[in-house]
Amino acid sequence: MDPLSARLDQVVARHAELQAMLSRGDLDSSKFTQASKEYAEIGPLVEVVQELRRCESGIADAEQMLADAATDAELRGMAEEELAGLRARLPELDRRVKVMLLPRDEADDRNAILEVRAGTGGDEAALFAADLFRMYQRYADLHRWKLDVMELSETGLGGINRAVAEISGRGVFARLKFESGVHRVQRVPQTEASGRIHTSAATVAVLPEAEEVDVRIDDRDLRIDVFRSSGPGGQSVNTTDSAVRITHLPSGIVVSQQDEKSQHKNKAKAMKILRARLYEMERAKLAAERAASRRGQVGSGDRSERIRTYNFPQGRCTDHRINLTLYKLDKVLEGSALDEVIEALIADDEASRLAELAA
Image 1 (tube, helix red, strand yellow):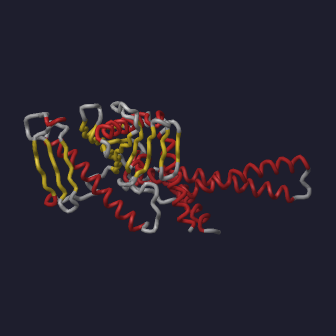
Image 2 (cartoon, rainbow, N blue to C red):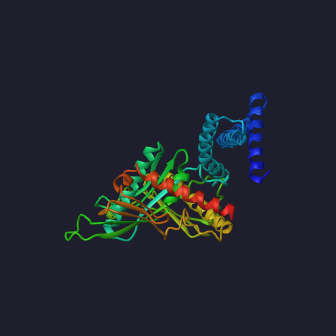
Image 3 (tube, helix red, strand yellow):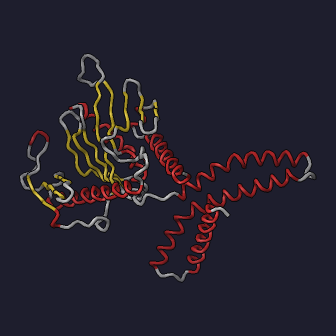
């Protein structure tokens, strides 16, 4: 028996064992919760394995029927037709099983901290950053995720310099983690009288939300400054020192929060962002150590990498990591077609990891 079949047998056996344990009803609450979680996690894989084995069994039966000289012409024709259909399905079922066996990113089920910053391009970059932030807001709505704005630094022209939001829901980080990087826009600004196309950019960072147990922060490693909040152009938002700036001395990471009127709330938000950044920094370090030889084209999280271009004159959106171009820019920015890009990125990432296992 090949190693893959042996592993699949173990998964199916474990699923049956868990089913028996849960049906007995003699587990304490902690063990019951743990067993239920494991049972639910491997259930989808077991379903695909069973489908794969039914397909393999059907192929064997059809081949045996065709090998039997006593099989009449009508049955032979039915067997040939069935065999062709099963053989066509087999590679996809085999691929699905292997993808489901790939090591999961432990952060995939986490909520995410989304940060959008205006890059090069002045006012036009700020307007584009606002477009991107709205795209993610609409995308979150379509997936029934909850999006809470943690920080919003607006310009006077409808743009944003920086926006930070917490997005919570099922599979948030798994779907949004490929969005980190530099997003570029090519369009004619409304203020451009000559009709020249300008190129601007915005940076997107998607971080898995971290709990206190994930990242232990020593208070002695923090410098916390408080100051008076200010709005666009320096106008005062309130008259108390409620804004908070936290500097993590070992890493040099600085996080500021001033949206809330309460210093306590601003500090809590800043700590949440700091934990997410430190957690992502550690994840990136471990990923680099585990895959030093990997090309890392998709999901590298390198914010200096230009990952996507939104070309308004041509109505196209191009993801440079996988050479995917969609001529439905309006639907991408509405969030409705963003899944097409994300699904392609996920598929490419799975294919790369499968290729590594086969190498």
